[in-house]
Image (cartoon, rainbow, N blue to C red; front, side):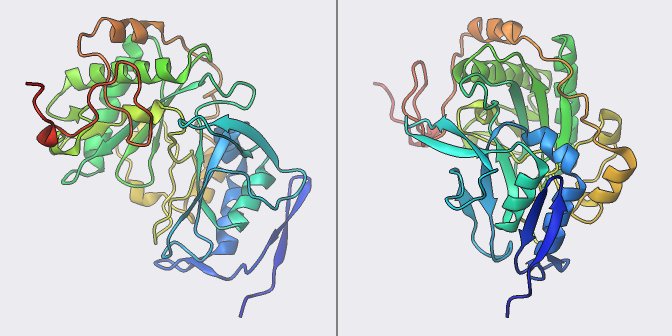
Amino acid sequence: MASPFIELEVGERTVKVTNPDKVYFPEIGATKRELVEYYVSVGEGALRALKDRPTNLKRHPDGVQTEAIYQKRMPPKHPEWLQSVEVTFPSGRKAHSLRVTEVAAIAYCANLGTIDFHPWQVRATDVEHPDELRVDLDPQPGLEFDAARKAAFLTRDVLAELGMTGFVKTSGNRGVHIAVRIEPRWDFVQVRHAGIALARAVEARDPSLVTTAWWKEERGERVFIDFNQNARDRTVASAYSVRAKPHAPVSTPLTWDELADADPRDFDIRTVPARFAKVGDVHAAIDDAAYSIETLLDLYAGDDRGDLPYPPNYPKMPGEPKRVQPSKARSDT
C-alpha cells in the first residue's frame, strides 16, 4: 500500500511528494523522500548546473532496479509555474523540454521519479549556440577511476595552455566530466569541432592512456574522450545529479586539488548534502568567465584528419567519414 504523501516547502513553492517511503535505491534502502530532500539540500548547486537549460529527465518511478523512462519532453501534466523551452532535435523535429528555473522544479521532477537530470549545453535564451564545452572522460573496460583522473589532469594542462579553465566533477561512475564555459557565438557543429580538437590535443599528450577512437573495437584499455557529447541533443548528467545505481552515487563537483585523491564511491545521496553544507558549491565561479574557442577551431581546421563519426541517430553530416566500424567497412576498391 502506498504511503501517505508529504509536502515540502521549496522556496516559494509547496511540492507534494507522493509515496515518500518507496525504496528507490535498494542497496542502501534510500527512499523517494530522501531523493527529493537530497535535491533540495544541494539546491543552489544543482540549480546552477541546470538554470535555464533544456533538460532531459531519466526517470525510474518504481526505483532504480526497474527500466528507465527517458523523457525529453515537458511532463504533460504539470503546475503552471513549471517552465519549458522549445528545442530542435537532430531529426529536425521540435519539442518543448523542461526549462529549470528554480529548485522547486528540480524537486517536482524528483517526485516524478527523476533520478538523473541531463541538461543541454545551451540556455533557453539561445538554444542554437552552446555556452558550454564538455569533456567526457570514459574509462574503457579494464580501467578504473584513476585512469580518468590522469586523463583529466592532462586535459587541465591543455586547457591552461589555451588560457581556459575547466571545472571538474565525478561522473557518478568511473569517469570524469570537465565543463568549460564558452561564449555563445558558435553553433553545435563548430563547438563539436572544438571538442574534437581539444580531445586530439589531449590524446597527443599520452596516446597510450587517451583515445578519440569512436569505434569501441579501436579503443583498447584507454580513456575515451567522447567528443560527441558536444553534439546537439547529447547530454551528460548534471553536477549534483544522482545516478540510477543501487547505491545512489552522485556526480559531484570537485576542486582540482580534491581530484588528486578523490574516490567517487565517497560521494552519494547521503554524504554529499553534508559536504555541500560544509564547503558549499565548489563550482560557484563557473559562470564568472566565458572563453573563445577560436584557437580550437583553428586547430581543427589545420588538422588533415578532418571530422569524426556522429552518433547513429544523426543524419549524415557534411564532411563526416563513413559511419561504419572499421572491421565491417568495405574497401573503396
